Length: 437
Image (cartoon, rainbow, N blue to C red; front, top):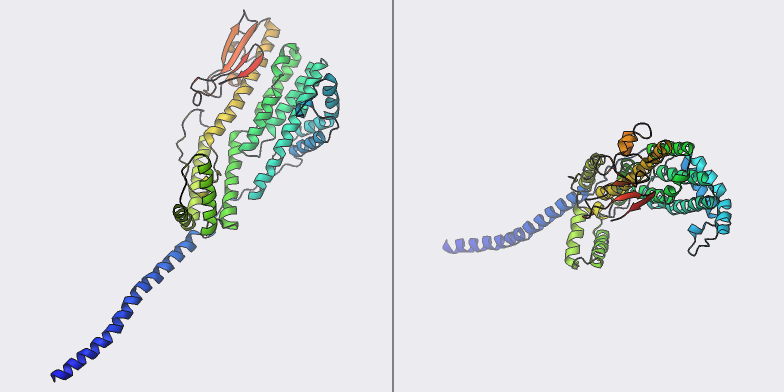
């Protein structure tokens, strides 16, 4: 009996050993399979098609921007180019006159565009964002050609015609960025600076009627100029196009291999700028994290940040932003703009226009009273509205000082004390606009 029990136990132990071995193999294998299923499910969920906002843009017909484009084409094909567009310019009077004569068709096309509503061509896909930038350089060249023509009119003693032409260029620079992003707005600002280069020099030569006309044109420009709010709205939409391209169409941030190439390029740029280099293991880990991240959450987070940033656009200049930009693959591509930098840039343009409008009002006052006004309060409301002399940097009236018994004056803006510890100013001294740091 004892022998039979021993034999039975040995048989059962032999049977248990394979079963135990199978369980030892199956448990880890089942855990691995379950983990793989969970990772695959998370990967599939996190890389599902994202919902991106769509924007409908109604392009005016006719569109003044088409006339501006035609003006750039006519200017580029002119026989005699403006000396201001030459690397080694011929600054003789004959060269200016010949270029001015050839620029007339382009100027007429530009003036036709000023009579119409204008909208910069909208970007309908990610690839059109860069394609639409191609007009900016020709527009700057057109600006130099128009400015060269105005200089030729000055040489011929046609001060009123030169001033009118500079006003036309100023208005085009203020109008054409509407419908474009921040880059278009910055280009418009650079052309505005171009248009006002010799503007103040001709101011004392204008009659009362001509000064009144200049004042009304500047009022029209102030009313028509594109705003940072417009440009930021377009830039937000361009962020949506970027997200749609890289997350939905290209799927560039769902493939770990493609993400690793992006991460390598990003850290290569950082290392070139003096940043810390990363090892292959660190880049592999980050690539996996990006590939496994919830792309819809990224889009929603960026959208919430953009909405909060839009709410800060119209706040007084100088108030610190309270919006924290999320750190993700889209923001690393620079798809969300720096509102503080953009606001500083556009506020400078607005300050220049405010100074210019106030200057014209001061010259109109002198035409009537024989001297410049003792204070800015003497200008409103007969020569300028009280709101037009407000410094956009601080919401207070521009700084004004009359010199030499009312024969000259200084108009200044507080500038940008936030970024410039020396309190840089944008000043108009004795008929010349100065900007220094």
